[in-house]
Length: 475
Image 1 (cartoon, rainbow, N blue to C red):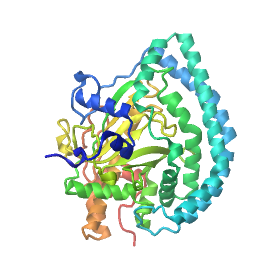
Image 2: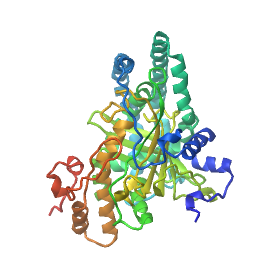
Image 3: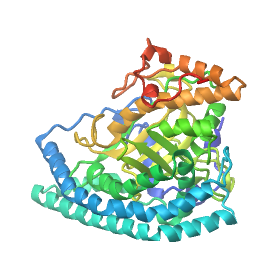
C-alpha cells in the first residue's frame, strides 16, 4: 500500500517549495537511495540501521592539516571573540527583554505561536532592537569569511592540493542552495520564543551570542573545509532502544512532536528539558509551508552554550495539500522530522541530511524495533580533528553524543505516555525509571546494555543522573 509520505498530490516544483528543498539536493539523495541507501557507492549496501565504515586518516598530511587548522583558528578566533563577545551580548539584551515579555503572554501548554497582529508587532519591535547586534553579527561573519579564504588558499597553494579541493567542493554541492535564513527571520523569532520559554532569557541570549561568533568558523573552517580536508559523503545512524510499549507508532511520534515542537511547556516538563545538554525545538510551520526554521540548543559547559539553526520539514504537515517527502532511510517505519543542514546556513556546524523517525530496527538491530532512529547523511573528512567519536567536531562526535542523550529522551517519552494514559506522576516515573536502558556506544552498531535495565542498575552513573533529573517524587 502507498504510504502517506509517498503520495504525490502536487507537482515537483510545488513540493520542493512546500518542503524547503532544492533540485540538486533531491537528485543527490535519490541517487543515494538508488545505489542502496548508505552512499553513492553500491558496494556500501542498503543497511541504514548501522553506521558506514569510516576509518580515520592517520597520515602525516592529515595530522599536519589538523595542526595548521588549530593554530590558525587560535590566531583568529580568540582575539575576535574577546573583542566581539561583550558588545554582542549587550546589544542583544534589549530585544530579549521584549521577547521575554512576549513569552509571558503565552499560556503553558501552548502548542503553536499564532502569527497574529500581536506577534507581528512584537517581531518588528524586536527586530529594530536587535538591529545593532545584527550588524555586528554580519561584520563577524564577513571577517570570518575573509580569514577562511586567507588561511585556506594559503594552505592549498603551499600543498598544491588543487584537484583534492575541487573534489571536496563537489561533495558540498548538493547542500549549497537551501532556503536563505534572512528570508525566514519570523521563523527564528518563533523558535527563540520557544527556546526562551524552555531555558530563560540569559541562557538563550548567551547561546545566541556564541552561535553568531563561533559557529560559522567551526562550520566552514574546522568541520567541512575543502581547502584543508578531503571531503566525502558519510552515513551514521543512531537508534534508541525499543519503545514498543509506547504504541502505536503514531502515538509515540505525537508525544515526540509535543516535546520538540510545543511552543511553551508546562513548568514540570520545562524544568526537565532545561537540564538536558541538547534541546531541539522545531516549531510548527506557518500556513503555506511544510517546513520551518528551528533551533537546537547545546550545552557543553557554562561558558560554551550554543544555538544552532536548522531547516525542518514536518512529516505530519499537510499544508499545500501535500504530505509527500523523500525518506532516505530503509529502516524507517514512520517519519517525524527531516532536518537539512544546508552548507549555505552558516549557523550550524554540520552539513547533512538528517531524519528523525520511528524505526523498524532494520536488519542489523531488530531488537530496537519501534525505537526512534536518527540517521545522518553528511559531508565529512576522515581527519582525527573532525571525524572521530572523540573529535572536536563532526559527525563522529555527534554519533557518540546521541548514543548518550537518546536514553534520556526515551525516558521522557515513556513517562509522558503513561501520564497521558492516566497514571499518576509517581507511577509513570517509576515505570520510566524501571525501563531505562543505555547502549554500548561505538561505531557501527551500538547495542543495548542487556544487563542494565532500570535506573537503579546504573548506581548513579547514567546520562539521566548526569543531568540531575528527578528519580522520585519529593514530598
